[in-house]
Image 1: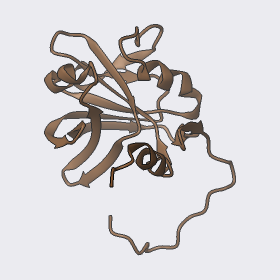
Image 2: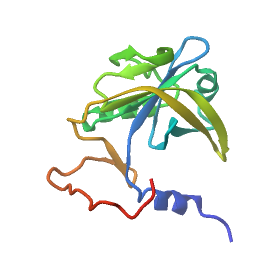
Image 3: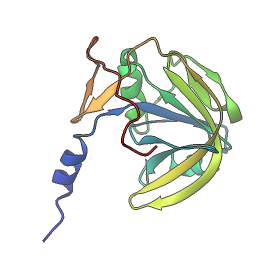
Length: 173
């Protein structure tokens, strides 16, 4: 029986994620930026995160050369930035306000959080390459609502629809 990739992708879209832009400075000094929802925390000790990059991405060779990178967690108000950095071979950095972080990775102004990382490991992930980064610095500004991606569309969170879980949660961190 053939594996239905379209149905698989649709099933995966049932998992709501935040949206991040991964930024770095390539070996040739060029600024890199990629929108993705494949960002996860991995470990607290050492502090590790991961994200994956499509093997067809034009920025993949530059990401491999980068001395460091930043994960910029987008707010609901940054949907335009998400779209801008999702386009391949475009002028992604036009009118983008940012500062420079670890290894000159751009930190997007207005992001909910920044995780500045040094490369830790890379792994085969099928049609993607998995990057593990060791967090060397981070900042967080939790006042704005996050940009959420669900079923192939952007969403926000409904105010007042949050509840604290009963502790301890019966899951393993």
